[in-house]
Length: 114
Length: 112
Image (cartoon, rainbow over all chains, first blue to last red; front, side, top):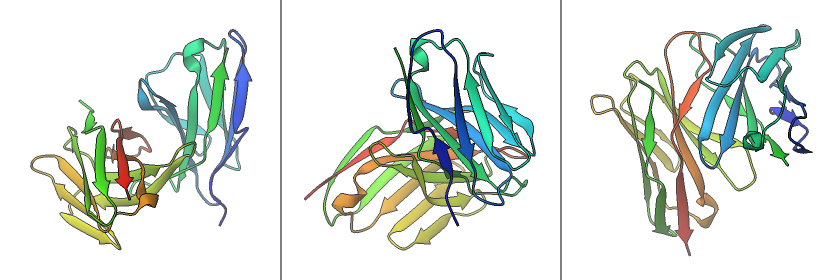
């Protein structure tokens, strides 16, 4: 079974631009969660999508948004990029049931904002 | 509140055992996890433990959970240089959520 894939792996953008990152979960997984990893703040939860609906949301500004498609693939969008948005963005997938206990992470997209 | 704490650095010699510790605050956590991150890579799930268990063993890995003290540890037996990485503990709350709360990560350095 293929693992979680994320595209692109690397991105360079300038302040004020917007960016869209993509995540394809493991086949059969219906939940996709997104995390931001920075040296200063560590790993922080952005949001989770399950069956095309946002199920949970972290404490990030509205510039960060996401969506999930009927095939469970997910995208996250960051508008009006700031220097502080430079980070590794990780997505994780799981079956998404109440008792689901394992989340599997992709390799991440490294975003650099200049 | 939600908070997970880990020591930041551990150095051991190859062949020794490593013990990485973690404390958490949410007593309603259902699952607790250990992930490994190598440079430039994503997170690799190592093992997890359900909150009603005290111990779980998986080959060289042993997880101990003290629910009363909200303390979790990961023991790596016969530590190898390939085990050098950052180790994160994480907790999952109850109910319908995929949200994990992570610690800051412990950098494990294995000296030959």
